[in-house]
Length: 290
Image 1 (cartoon, rainbow, N blue to C red):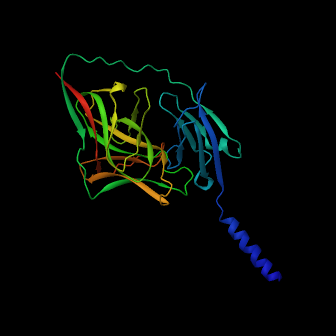
Image 2: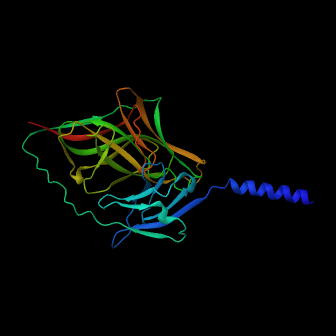
Image 3: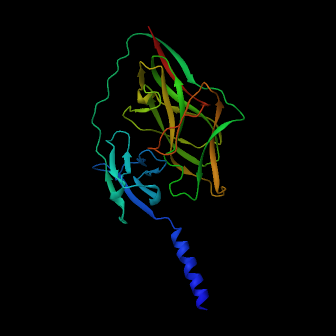
């Protein structure tokens, strides 16, 4: 009897030793007057993070064994000044936290279009490969899903353009997915720098397959003096059908090419990787020439 008790006690001790300590951070991201929808929360340089919902609320589950007290959470949203908070400040806090971001009042550079010839052009990949694709998916056992994941590519453009629309081809098993469209300066070869146009460009995907078009004309986006830019979509929210399988996915057709460069990172503050893929996505723009 005592032997059985000792064996049971030893087993429980071993089991407890394998339990990973975790920090569950719940909170809301707000401005001075209202919640900030779809703000990103990520650990700098790591594949850990999430995205707030439309009411600014978020849940982030961290495995403490993968972290150090020097790790930092970066909270950001378009139009606001990003905030950096040490991970150690959340240890032992069980109640929801409120994170306040201040408006970024830096004025955008005014761009004047000089009288030039204008021609509508497409930049990027307009074809649809049938046998290769890049996958973005949701795994239900994860607290924060695929939230914050970004995928895109490097697109060669003319020197002076005004964007009209963004187009991407999808094969989709979700009822609806909400994405954020983002643009990056690639002056530094492997260090994409976000280009802010002052507005968050958010769009929905709710078709099974085909081209999704995002009208950009109301944003008045001019890009001057660049030969190429990075263009990505960031996963913000997904809704599946009631009878969906446990793991469902969205894929984007992609050609594998040594001459192309994709952009990929698992979370909002993770390190970038640059797969040799060319996604089926393109920009329509008015190109100006002398």
